[in-house]
Length: 312
Image (cartoon, rainbow, N blue to C red; front, side):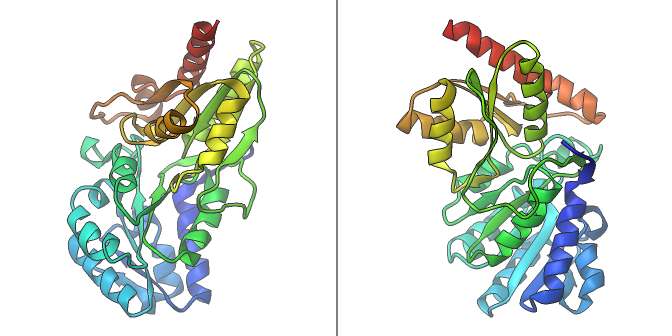
């Protein structure tokens, strides 16, 4: 893993670059542009940037109208609002008619910059994964975010894009992202770790800790939660016969649930899920939150070792 880069900054930069070239891309913001970084787009192409204010429901309705006219609208707000405040509009005027609207949910997971527990979105994957016609993307680092923004714009249909807030290590190859495809980051023989979003960095750190104890971990990064890469998940489970999932999300309805569904149908496998244990979270520093809710590399290591002990 190399230097640290902000995933939200990568999102804003990529969107602005695309906007300069693709005249059909428009951005609608709900009074959060400096935080979500869509202000980069507003500065680059102000004539296609619309500040709608604190009116998320109206924003989705406007985006649906623009999509019906052939534009590619990108809406931006915090993920907590996209999954609660505006969900009815998304369901009825975007998902049901399958309009080409891209919805960016910022500040996902528990690490929301001390904005308060109301702003921590730990159910967004579950909400959008359960919605027909919706594609769900959760990039692991800044490089993957840049590639995912381009893929999202090129894709015809509704997309929900998770945008994490803070800088994270950069480890994914530049320009390599395909909707619906997972990526093997490490080959291993003893235990498989399947992760998404910023937890992939923790999965890699966990694999190093495990290696120090003579345990070889197979790492699969899943950045498209829907459609999920069934073949890659089954192949990863085949490598070791043991699977740990890691996500910055409730264990219900997120990556762990999706992987369990895949393996339950295609390859029953002993599993452990690392994630928020079905509880509302609190506000604190990042290390305190990660430690309290079991989202550290050490928690992944403990889950892997527990599986290995059970397998013996």
